[in-house]
Figure 1 (spheres, helix red, strand yellow):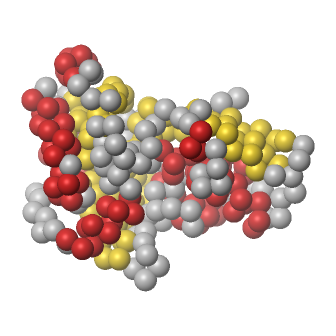
Figure 2 (cartoon, rainbow, N blue to C red):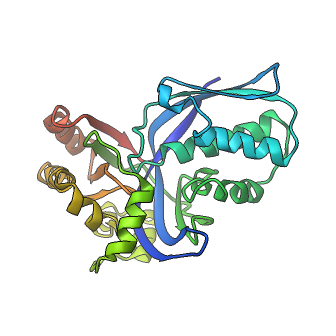
Length: 282
């Protein structure tokens, strides 16, 4: 049975100091969206991890789902083999957490398949060894994420928001984005408030959510790639309540008051960029 591996958007992202481990402290509000990859995870007779994908680039040991399977196999001395197939729909290196979601989905699925009986806290600890965004995908739809991505506070009353995702058709490496941020350390002024955002989600107040969207990476990304700012302005021109870069970009998302405005915006822009996708938060 194929398993959905959902993408996410960062409604808020503040970057703190770089730690000796190489990770940065962050404060983020992440929310899953309905855009997803589809993963099939099944046992094989030989004792090895086989990774396959509709995107040939991902059929390698560099894949985070492979990393997740390998980590479990070594740590718990699993002698069974597995085949992981990923039907890729989420763009790569797009700020949508596709690879991190695949890794988390692999961890949760293999926990069942190999009868490891790991609790959520144990899975989160393992996930944090793979990447900063991976822990979020263990179980939450919306969460306030802090620390190095390992402190996760669930936002219980998350609701469905109409979202449009636009990707300009190139990739941005998260590693590059953090490195550029550390070098430039831009001065960022914002009225966005993370606590106000969490309250707005719990109250289902779409206008207040829109008022508190923020991403520290936006300055870095828009400085290097003018088209990202153009996309943001295009979404605002087409009645998005607000628009922001997700993760380390370059995908920009706009949030809309209703499905009607979102559809109108989609029809206006769907042929302007390589990837335009209408979705909802979960």
